Amino acid sequence: QVQLVESGGGLVQAGGSLRLSCVASGSISSINGMGWFRQGPGRQRELVASILSDGNTYYRDSVKGRFTISRDNGKNTVYLQMNSLKPEDTAVYYCNVVALRSIPQGSWGQGTQVTVSS
Image 1 (cartoon, one colour):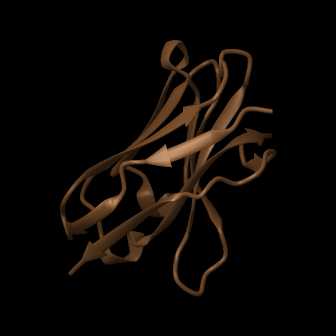
Image 2 (cartoon, helix red, strand yellow):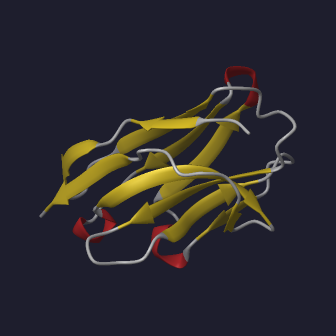
């Protein structure tokens, strides 16, 4: 089981951008689904986006057109480009292996905090 380390979070004003990175301890080439999740204050963890090994992607409605998930198997890294950020995007963001496009499979890392100020 690969270990995943998230980074790239920070404090940004509404309308700004951030790029999150998720680096795996081993190869992700053989892993079909990878996903980004988030957990906002007082809220349950939710799937933000996922990507399959064939490049197919899924986004929750609230981030469509603003966020882009990508993966670089050569670097064992999954990215989440977040544009036009809103205060409601404030959360701790986590990555994980996913099955069936949305079901997390591995243990959770420490995540990376994203705070969007209005």
